[in-house]
Image (cartoon, rainbow, N blue to C red; front, side, top):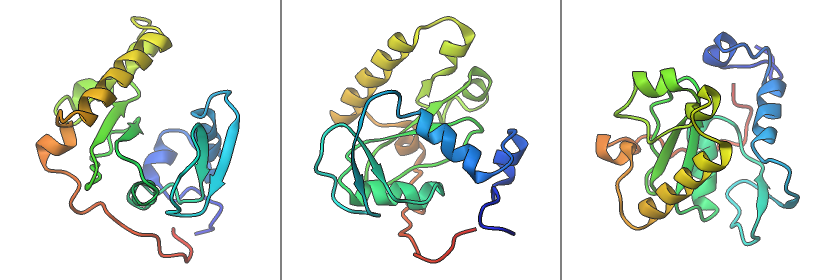
Length: 163
């Protein structure tokens, strides 16, 4: 296996041909705001706004970096249904499409497929997500917390190559 290949069979099944394409999709999630800072893995985040952390895309290792950097609530997007939690912080799972949300209603917190379905605007979904973040920060349990997910996902980065 090459390190510039896409190591995830699920990503390949979803149409990605390499990890570079996946990274371009991750960059698009940042929107059009300016990048204000770049952090090393697990470095404490002190700046406000859009920041980048040098961390692998592998869910447990990347999320662990965010927790170590000071994250209090994680918004985890999934298009294929990753059963993921991230103790010690709440992890909100955002389904990118309605069929996924309908397949896994107990494990997803938000159906973002409403945007693609045309039943909600990006702004409306954003407000719904923001309100859920506030409720979660105020003690409302996430799907992962209700299901007991997250104990096994805390995984610091072995700085070697990850395939």
